[in-house]
Amino acid sequence: MADGALIYSFGLIKLLKKMGGDVTLVSFTDGEEYSNDEIEELKKYVSEVHLCRLTWKSTALNLSMKYPNNIRKYTRKAMFRLLADIKKRKQYDTVIIDHLQMFEYAKMFSECRVILHTHNVESDIWFEYAKKCKRIVKVLVKRSAKMTYEYEKKAIKTADYVTAISESDAQKFSSMVPEKKIEVLRGFSEYQIIKNNSSMQKVSKKILFIGSYGWYPNVAAAKYLINEVMPILRAKKLDVKLYLVGKDPTDEMIECGKKHTDIIVTGMVDSVDPYIEECDLFVNAVCEGSGINIKMTEAMGKGIPIVTSEFGARGYDLENGEQVLIYKNSTECAEYIEKLLRDRQFAIQLRNNARAFYEEFNMPAEKVRDLFITK
Image (tube, rainbow, N blue to C red; front, side, top):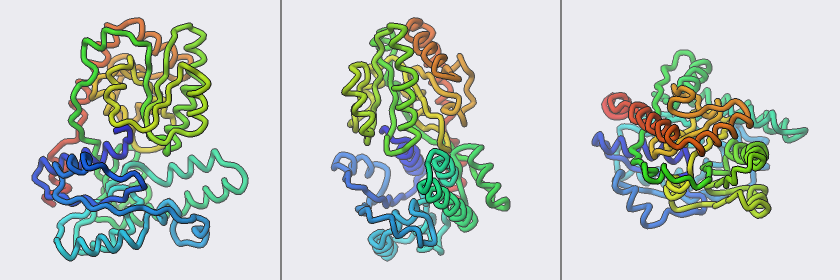
């Protein structure tokens, strides 16, 4: 998986299954239908899978709506009908609303315990995005950010329980609704080491960034690596290739891949594991957003050495030079990349420490059972 949100959600599903939970998964699809293999993989952890095709409609009418477009576009009659049909056939104790965008459907389950399982502070993302916009677009995005804040506040107040992915997110939610107790739940996963000692000894001079590029912080990270870091690496004559892996690359990214032979833009891939095995290190250049970077958990778990921005390391109690290398600017980023390419023994020690950190970091099972199963 290249999508941190999917990794976080799937990790929770797997953990619920391990605890004996009988899980029904209901999800939108946005045009890329799940393959039969994917459905079969999901059915290892859930008893039922129900999919609803998300059809995109014009967003222009949102200016007069009572809630923001990022909520409205996921509010569909087809999903209401699907959920109503599921309710007729089966009773549920707990309904987990995964992402704020799905909270409109909570009203259908007033008889159940409703848990809002958040991935980030949605309104923060929109306020940050508004800072990058100009003129009328800035006005409209800022308006959407304010509406999202009010909607988020209402959802937190309404839900029976709310989870946050980091302490900083929990604090922001608590500032919205002080009386609500927010549970911090870090992502659960069971990654096997992909980059073994043998592949660690080889130097391919390939560096990796993974992300879903429909998410603007990932696009900004890719542009940073292309425009700020790669020119420094070229000047050092290191002959490094940058792999940008993940779905929905922008036209600008694709054009850069055509222009520069040392920039490879893959688009959607079946698995990121071959790239993790082949590349020498993972560079997390994300410098904005909310929550924590789940891609960091995957990189640590799968055993690839990491160079990360200070922002990318937030939410993890990591020490610079112990488990990862944390850079402050593009020059330092390039220096750290060069260090890991030249000193493989240090790179191996760094990734071993990161793997040990990962094994301790996983979500405590008792907290999940208490919150989702037994309360």
